[in-house]
Image 1: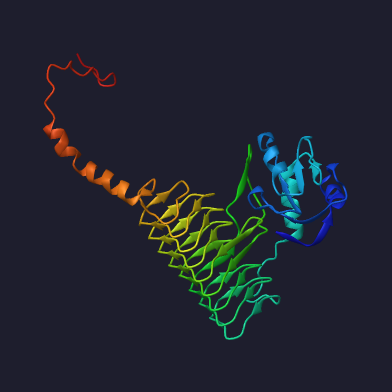
Image 2: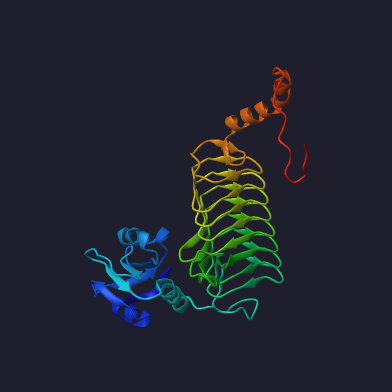
Length: 326
């Protein structure tokens, strides 16, 4: 997430009541989770074993809750509750704006775009030329939609990320400061839900086609010309390269990388990265030939057991202690 303008690190430290270690002349250009940080960004960690990963990342300013060694050209901000400091900065620079009309005055809609009845379009949404947004769809703040995009009825675009931090007393939601970017010539089927990024962007690449009732989690990046059949669900921050095909009811866990041209057959569950150019099936998904051989062997198991020599003179089963016996 980019700030509207660069913010001096001294100003940030004052806002979150933090001590500066390192270069106090730096400017922050934006704020991001560790997965998507860039030079000039702020990130944070409140778990000591992840301090070094945050410090070694591309981030320029790191919020921590303990003192650590600061590399040259960076700044550490030491405060009591880094998560709350980070979350507060996101809320301040991307404040919540409730929908109170069907079309926010700041929204921009291109020429030739059709907006059907009961569509709601939020703050700072940009929609390109010759799009078709069908009835009852809601497009929340800061979404960016390219040209010739079709979004069928009852979709929710740029919903808040399902992203929570766990405390002993319960879960606290992270403020979603990212965007949803839908590139040119994308088709999104009815009843689909696309979450915005927490601090980075959720992206649907040019020419990709999504069937009905699809869920994309926060920060998912979908490549160009991907094809997703009905009821596919993809967990947050997973990246799919170009030309990926997912058949119906495929589920993909969070934080994975799916290579270019991968095909995943229906009802499969993906729990690890998938190598480009291969077809996968099963739960957990593996190369289709391996899965099919295993299924074929499983079907032969009853006959195989019948052919085994009968084993005799085995001791009797012990009595069930819950039932009794002699």
